[in-house]
Image 1: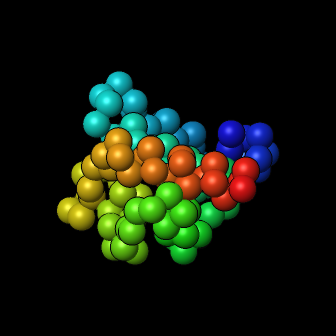
Image 2 (image 1 turned 90 degrees about the vertical axis):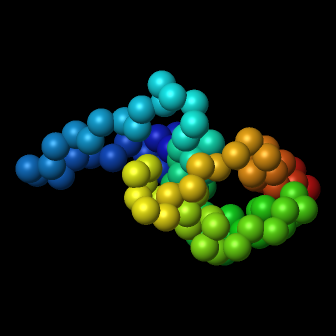
Length: 97
């Protein structure tokens, strides 16, 4: 989806290829989903909060930031299924009407 929406990113000189995040363990799959969709659709934090509100879920800026942090960070929070489900529901409402 990211490559389709934004195009393939060419590596800069001297830049090494970063490994893809591991999705072998299903605890952080929803966090990866939020990050990838945010990048692909060029959403800001406020846009994401609006998407959650369209689905009927109030998410604070701090809570959303915790979902988007790198795994292992002190303030990292695992995104549960209900947050991911409501985010996708909000996206369908936003783009389908």
